[in-house]
Image 1 (cartoon, rainbow, N blue to C red):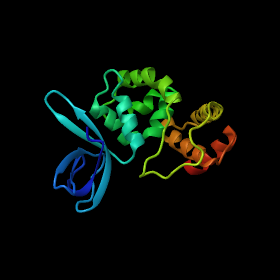
Image 2 (cartoon, one colour):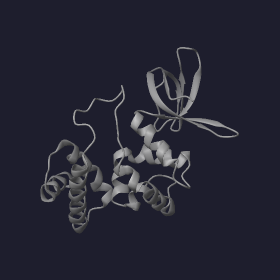
Image 3 (tube, rainbow, N blue to C red):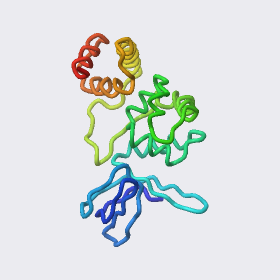
Image 4 (cartoon, rainbow, N blue to C red):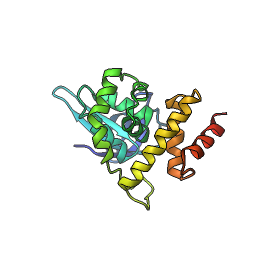
Length: 204
């Protein structure tokens, strides 16, 4: 199984790229965005083997690859839908949507309908609470490691209270969740009211 490819981009469009390795082999890889030809690149690969075909899906981080493969275990979710979710929403936003059962955010990914989004929440809600997101040689090392259960519960309460307040002000979850995630990562706010103030400043 192919898990990682590095080389030079020789062709790319909005769906696929061809990467030429030092061994002279060019691999056609599904990529989220066009890549610049004649530039070196390195991608984590999920190698999907079917009876009549093989496909390579490329990711910038090992965590994206890991979550893509987790989505494939959900009934009714194929590689194209899983790739669309990871590419358009990102791992952290998918985790937030699953944790708070926000089907609308999952539906915003191309090719993902209401039933599929509900199945993702049903299948992965327990798994994402135990998910350990690590780091690879392409990622910056973290000093704090995985969050403790107490920290997860605190964040969950903070997000729920902030979302409720912002919904009352007429904002949509799709617009608010990425801002909440960013402020939680930077530690800018410890209380819902502080987080709401920071978000309002950005939304004005």
